[in-house]
Each structure stands twice: as C-alpha cells, then as structure tokens.
Length: 91
Image (cartoon, rainbow, N blue to C red; front, side):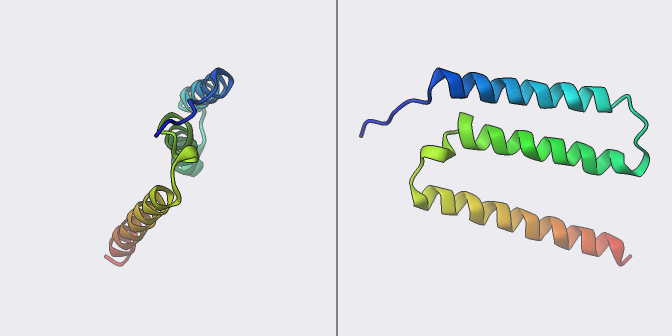
C-alpha cells in the first residue's frame, strides 16, 4: 500500500512550532511564575507531544483503528494519572 508522504511545508511548520514551543519553555523557565510554573510547563509539553504524535508519527494519516488505539491509550494514561493524584491528595 502506497501512502502520500507529508509535505515539506507541513514538516517545516511543525518543526518550527516545536522549536518555538521549546524556546517558550526555555524562556519561561527563567520567569517567576510561582504556582503556575508546573501547569504552564505541562501545557507546553502536552502541545509539543501532540504535534509530534500527529505530524511526525503521522497519526493524522493513519486508519481509524490506529487513531482509536492512540485515544484509548491516552485515556488510560489520563485515568492512571488521575488515580495517582487522587491517592496523593487523600494522604
């Protein structure tokens, strides 16, 4: 089965976005954000992970079954993280 390769434009745009997010993360590491530092860093990391998964791992072009598997894995991860946070919060 032959698949279309991603365009050079989309690869360059995604790479520039990831590098821009890295620069933002680096710059914000020197800013005094207080309690907001962790959520901001996690948000930037989440956006970078989604960009890498969608474009560099080519999940955008995959079949529905592969997309559903990725969604199920993300839901399981979110559930496990939620359970860990609930456990820590109740101690």
